[in-house]
Image 1 (cartoon, rainbow, N blue to C red):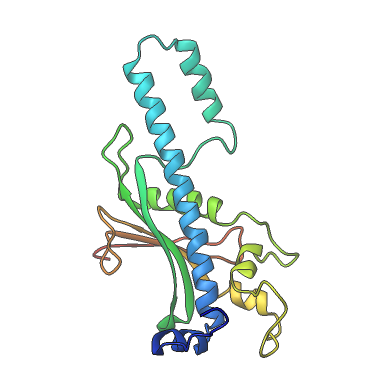
Image 2: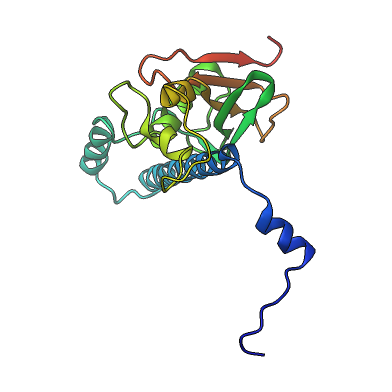
Length: 213
């Protein structure tokens, strides 16, 4: 009947009255940002692969066009550091044992014209490509990535308790970016892992862990 209000079922009533933590909220937004970065990189990789296949198979494409294309690829911001890979899925999660937030992606080599290698050099290049697409909003005056602040903040001003002092810097110091490199997505025992602190953004060391080491 019009105007009648349904009584909430046990399941929907629980959902309505169970709050979401800021960690849950922020991790979800960080995961979405990581997946957007992975999707963008996959698009660039597919475009490059298709272009090179055309250059290899179509004899009607002039050498001048090929030369100009290769020159354009050398321009800053026009190419990735690593080709021959794919990013199947991205993720973000809180690792309680290490008290850190991990934002990363699985990466697998593609059997193609540019088949990628599972080695430290590739892992470092993949990290650079991933971070270039992940961190897009610039930094604060303290060098904290604005993206991290956006992930772990409300859209409005409501909050139960005041933020701790130096919240943004402390938060960024507890976030790492992670690339897991293997022949298939393998979180527990991958052939290669490389991770890098989110803050400071420039000059952060990349830690490499290869299987068996």
